[in-house]
Image (spheres, rainbow, N blue to C red):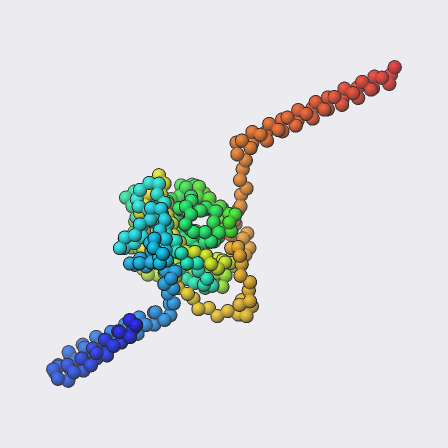
Length: 353
């Protein structure tokens, strides 16, 4: 509809220019300038039309200004949670205050097999470097609208988590530079270890200086043919840079998109400006078309990512009772041994009488 209106306006403008040029304009230079303006407008119109046709924006899964589909009404497509609030310019997941959690979640499950998600965000605050936290996360998960310790969401989730971590919890002198963006695939049993910055379950990531920049930050997540590609634009150059590339990743259909953030003793403003989902057109082989859909997220050859699933150690109470029963068992064995030894010795004496 917008394209039709634009073309109609251009036709009127062309007629106007022709009439003006015939009856009023006698200066060749003026006619040349008008012709250049007309060509520019026409090329822009065609470029806009091509952009709309090629990108396949899925508005039902996208969150953009002026955020009309976000709220508490029955017609809303997105839900707010916790401290998240809407402004004309962004959705502020958490303000620059301590101990806050906020999130935004899509109400509509996604059944697209091939897609690309572009996330536009900004992290900023008053605190100095390394005295801010904690970051934000982008989700494609089975669960939704549940708070927790993983950037305001469950730390034992089912699906995909992209973590924009702005504070190093484990080791301030580690070779990894922060802010750091990492990828984790959760199957409902793996746990995101916030104290270790998610290292045990990380599938890939990169350093990205996204805090207190003069420009906004962008993350691109592309999922197609069991391959997840993560790219970033954090330099204000409008150029995507590779961050992670994971093959053999299998994600079930029907999951929800979301974004969340949390602050603790340290804080920042975590602003979500937009989430735009595009459907990708992919040609598949017959074998790929007949491939069975998975019900649990998985990734081929987990060993290549050095994912370590550590068993939880015993608690203090468990250790106490284990030690107590071990001592009692050892005592019983000693007593039984002494009794048997006494009887054997007594029987040995009787043989000599």
